Length: 355
Image: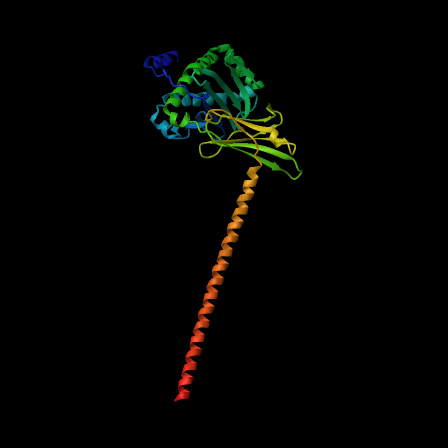
């Protein structure tokens, strides 16, 4: 691995001078599944850069190579990822074979073995942290303490693996070196090649609304949407003091269009609305936003409804006036025609009498 990283340095691939806003991460998710009737376990792997899936791998596919999930990744070499996925396939196959011994259960049945590994970098591209975590049948199993290069066992079965891996020592050392060097290189390469997508910043659109439930309790909600990347801070302040314990937060969620949304709510006493301020911080904002609930926002909604009603009433009134006018003209026309006819008939009578 050291020779691999050294060769990259010699070619200058790691000399990246660009500074990126915020932290960034590279994560590999591997899942191995065994079940009766399968000659070998099925391996499904995905690669994420920040919140975006960039590659996927399925051992049941004929190609046996990762598949790109974003357009720009098609022009990026992923030989290293191919090697990682194939190594994971071999490793997990072995783990599922020895699992019945470690976890004291009979062979057969459906079992899963999972691993999450990856690294994060600071905004200047330097290493922040690395992580390696294993899970078995949906439960936490082993995790690597990268500072001490020691394994932490969560279950009794994992203790057997822990003793074996720590006796060899080479595995923890490999991971420490990989996470701090090779993983960071891969992440920087992805960020450089996909910077138009991964390094963009879309500021949030924020709105503060007031809600009253059936019990009369009042809640202020601060909602941010349309932002990227996903990292954002929504904090409610009361007279300038943070209300962390009183705030209800939902996790940041994808909006379905490549951006994210999040909200923070706080229960208050009716009449104290103006004491509360929502503070919003995000990479796309030049400075934090401070927003209060504005009562006139509800007035504007009512005014808009009133204006619409007035416009409709005016339209109806104009229609009635025009209809009456047309009706009146029609009647006058009929009267004139009738009068003219009667006048003509009178003339005829007079002429006849004279004759």
